[in-house]
Structures are given as structure tokens and as C-alpha cells.
Amino acid sequence: MNIVYLQRHDTAKNMHRFYQMHISPGIFGDWWLIREWGRVGSPGTVRKDWFDSEEEAVAASKKLRDVKSKKGYR
Image (cartoon, rainbow, N blue to C red; front, side):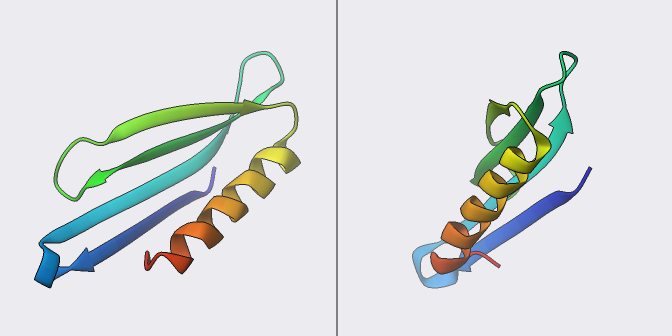
């Protein structure tokens, strides 16, 4: 299981956000992309998306990581 953890900080706007995602196998042969996001230090919002194959889940994870990187997450 590979965990991606990104943060974005802007002290001028008092913005301290995190975005975390990881891929996990399901019990029926499917794969889950589990995402959590919110303010650093607070419990975040969690979303689970399922995919038929690990490759699809990895591709979705990479796409989301690229989008977040363009928005300033590191």
C-alpha cells in the first residue's frame, strides 16, 4: 500500500490543508482509492472510490496527484 500525503500552506490566508490518498484491495477482487482531505490538525473528509483493477486505481491516483500539485500542494 502506497500512501500519498500532500500539504498546502498559505500563512497570509491562514490556509493549512492536507490531501491524503492510498490504494487498498477490496474483499471482492476490486480496488479502493481512499482519499482524505481537510485542514491540517483536524479530522478530514473521507471518500472511497472503487475500481475493477489496481491499474485503474493507480491511474486515478496519479491524475488526482497531478491536479493537486498544480493547485500548490506539495
